[in-house]
Image (tube, rainbow, N blue to C red; front, side):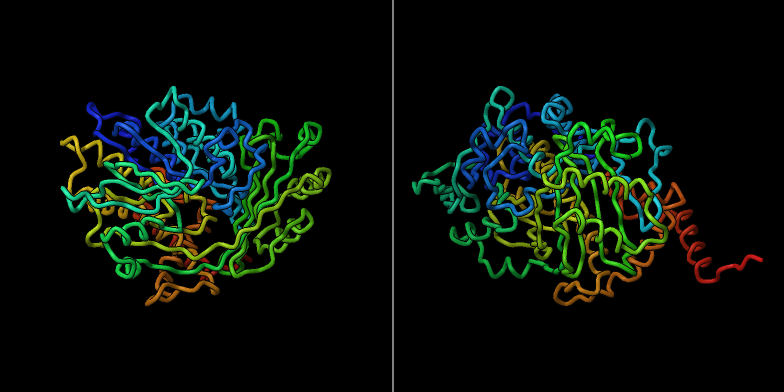
Length: 509
């Protein structure tokens, strides 16, 4: 959060040359927008050709008909943190209005989380003003909005997107530790060269940058593979979307009413010591209701509304969900013929520790899932990409010379690693609690057992204690949160007292 004020501010003298962004998904678009403030030109190289056309930036994203071949979660439910929204506000003027035009809801960041039977205490009294906001949008809607804003020539005239794939890089013979340019293979099979002052790998889990560096002779794939830590949470989720008609919207028994609803309807998290299932339901763009059912361990996932009911009913809770929720599901049967379903089997989580690498080009960096992928159930993937963008933006802002220095890549990767480690550790903490998770080489799931015990008690406390709820909410929203917040002495005492009461219950006569 300390780096956010620098986001959206321009260097007095821009660095000469071009920043080449390899990949035009969320990480690539955010990187392009940030670097527009610091370099003379920015070129995004995106493999899927239709994303460079009008349909790739259409206002009503749900009307798109082209398939997103390289992104299996394009039609899945998507989580956005308060931190991510704050970053968008820094990068794009009139962001709230652009969301409104796109049918995207911006509202207080209350996901209405039900922790195995009772609602998480949202820290309204801990916020100096109103609860910070976020946006409620599918991956499709968010990415389409960002692309339309980033590629808007009147606002950002020096950003260009081309259709193709970066397949190679050339060494700068006058500066052997630098990339001079990249080779692009266009979608029609032709090849072109782009000179580059900075190259950013935003190609996602394919990590195309590793292959490019290997071909150029900067490093070998084997040495980088040894820096890659991988574990498999063996999780999957299905997203079912329903188009809600105005007549049905007026009758849905959601507290506060569907029309005035900001976004979140309910999120149900099980007691992970007894169950492995999750559920989240939100109102997203275009008055679409999205229901996401997840589970660790590869259990069958629902693809119908009746399957959703069975999934939620099977989640282990300490007390039943409110009656309005079941009435809501019953009424949604009226639009079940509009249902679309997307199922995703989550690939293994990984982190390639580039901060430990040798012989990387001085003007090459990687951001987003090109560096690390975490379980998307926590809704922090795009926020993780923004952390990388912040690391790059802050570093470029602080450059005294009007060029990319020889230690730029190393300094960037160290900064990014420091920023994303909390996201990685928190996701790992939960995933390692699942008996079906395959841990990283040289590790076992018990390595996080003490932290997991404490977090479990903290979650239980957060259902009745606003201080505990505040710590969890801020961690979830990535707002002014650190790993030591949960270890505040008063909070530790509360957690230990709760554990003591659970171990030695007092009988009431």
